Length: 172
Image (tube, rainbow, N blue to C red):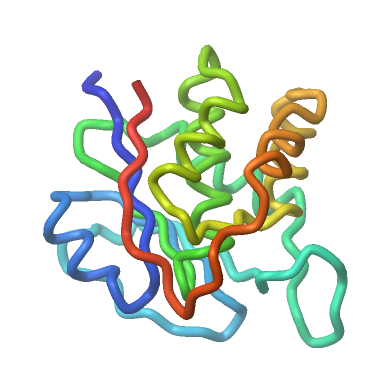
């Protein structure tokens, strides 16, 4: 198995990021009802769609991230052979997709310190503000005893922006 690389981007950068990276797997995390045309390089069975809103508390008319969403993400990540990169995107590439990339990195590189991974995420993306609920659900599911939550809290809120710049997170 080769060393894995996770790319994170916004919805407007999906096609370019998939093509430039050579990715063959894609995770789409958008609000329920939002549509995205799957890039032709990604087969249907290697495209996970998770329909949740970018919230961490229940809001009428929105889908709150839940354990079932984390379970689906972790199952998809575990099936990824890492032979080609994986792209994770949300609407702006700031909250849900950086959270999912952090969760994936913690799951696939369990030997790495949660705080070091969070610091690396901040270095790669000054604008990332990972969705706290997604991180907390994954922390609980993976038995990290609050270390993932504390690590993301330690990096703080990212710089304000309309859209985050694409970045790549190495798993090694």
